Image (cartoon, rainbow, N blue to C red; front, side, top):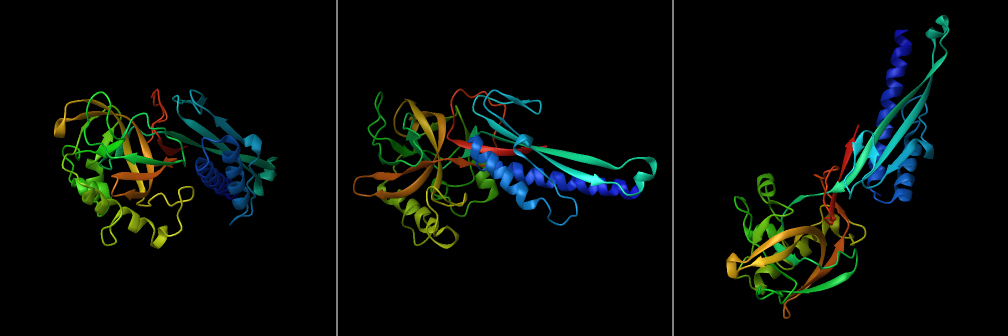
Length: 311
């Protein structure tokens, strides 16, 4: 009996390992059900006999998709979350248990992955005007604001002060280089936060941080080394060209007292700047990072999401 129970334990762990990896593969394709299912099935098929004599199976019927406001595995999703549950199965033939009339058992294990909106990000000290369309992949040019002045801001982007208590400087946050874990942790901002304008930023300052600083700017780093062949549709998630930027509404006041409210976030793929025209151009991309809340009751999507594996 101990031998057969050991076989069951090994089969159960194999099932769990493959369920976990298949669910995480599905997460890379959420919120799109068809491609997420295909990714899960490919991963399960590629791993079903590795390192064991017990094949592990997973079919399309073993995969459950759940959309916004649905319930899966006793978890109710918020209005912008998606989830997928993957179940794997393994048939174990008994050896000694046959002496007492038991011939086999089927082991099942499941894993659920959730993709949900992020409500806080480590800030890149730049703002983009709320209402700028988050049209994934579309090249956009943004003009630097010289105000702001209520009720219309002349220009669609500007710069923000570093958050209170942040251990990194404005330039370090904008450049995204050499940041310590403490710098990142203390730079977090959340939806609904008030943030304030950074004054005295000339073109030379943001050009140095973004495109030209002796190899340390975002563009210089993001187009070399491991990131050489990255594009806006196929990229490593740590590419420095990806800027997590608040989209804000102007609340009032001027200068360094000009106040904005964070309405949502965008992941902005930097393409370059036009120094003479004080323009930045790039594309919004779909981007996942740690920290999403599957129960979030946000009434609008944020532009930045996270995935979480739930057993």
